[in-house]
Length: 74
Image (cartoon, rainbow, N blue to C red):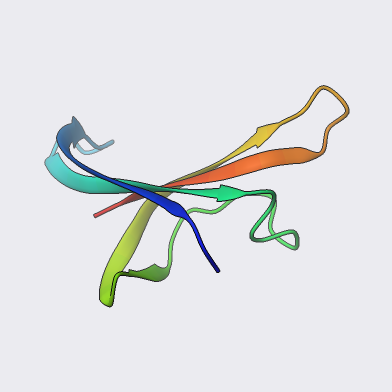
């Protein structure tokens, strides 16, 4: 499946107040996981490198359909 991958290093605080470094975002057209209400873990392979999913977001259209999916990656 093709995506728009953006290399981007940034740091965030998690719920335990630990600093986490994220190193990219993958953007997909439509809903890549229609059977899941939310995407909160797993792995993807981008340019041959396995990356851990930190957070996923499904951006919806006004009619409720999914326009695109964003994955923030470690």
